[in-house]
Length: 447
Image 1: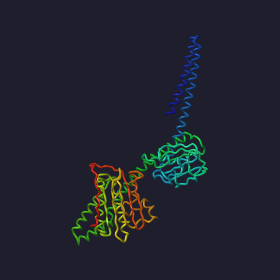
Image 2: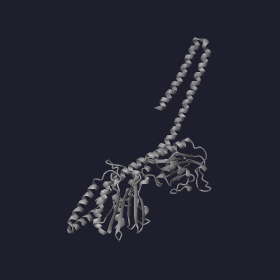
Image 3: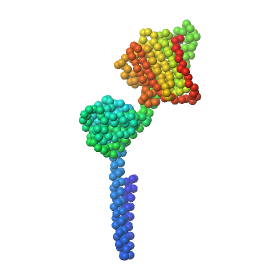
Image 4: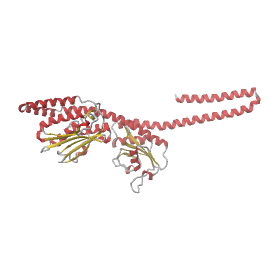
């Protein structure tokens, strides 16, 4: 349609100029004395016609340039979409870099996260293997500031490698952002020093923006899947046959020796299931999550008796703040099941919730068997904690998905000494917020 209108406009301009020449000829024929003016007007019209043609030629060239700039970007984004759905890692980054290098026709491409090189293709790739740390100050500066950086000289890379003979001469470094947070960088290189072509800069910016949108969509899809998985896993964990049978056996035992205790435990069990079955959405109040933990602890304490000691410390002024649902209870369950149960001697689980500035800080610590050093790096692997409630990996992923990469679980452990799991979240008030500060409630549960 656009082409048709342009051609029509060009034809119209041509016809208008020819019509003017015809009218001028008639004027000269009728009034011969005006032949000089007519000649001047004819020259002006000729120049007008010439400039019209030149303008159309420039417009066509601009359209071709825009097409060359936009089309590769869209093609790259379309080809990269299947890989971005799996997140940004070494495997997906390598595939995306291959696509960019092939379609974008650039000598070298690099993709990083905030700390490591995920992919590097082209000249100099042997100096920057995937998995290696980011070394150039230029890239670190882009990650820190979130701003585009163009480097036109090798010296300005500020590479700390002494006497580096890098074959790359210039680069445009663009931050990769997901939900306004810098998660990595995209770098397009050329081997010669000097100013980068604007088409290369535009290509890098366009690709980074589209990849950012795709990462956000992928993150939303992943969060949706995690929420559904967490809900199903939570129900399976809370209505775990072993947990249910063990608790019922404990209640049956007390029904013979202490009917009143059996009655109270049965009420607790019903309350526990009621909380689990109504657990929907991403958030609950700390008060409700704390009640769920207390109910679970009463049932487990009745089962393990003197083998299990629980120490709790909570800032009651935080009770009306929001917390992701089913975060405390799975971590406490994990500490008991994997820390205390395998231990021969009695063990202690300490639970602390306190305010630190504008954040809620949570710590679950046990003096159990600890986690072997070779196992510790695997604990956040999806499915690794499937035997203990929703698992550490699921809680960790949900925290980071809801609040950002800096809000995941922090786990430290030492064999035969115990494990500490910590996390923090921004304070978010519920309705009915109390402005009063509350002293820490500290109590020991040993009965």
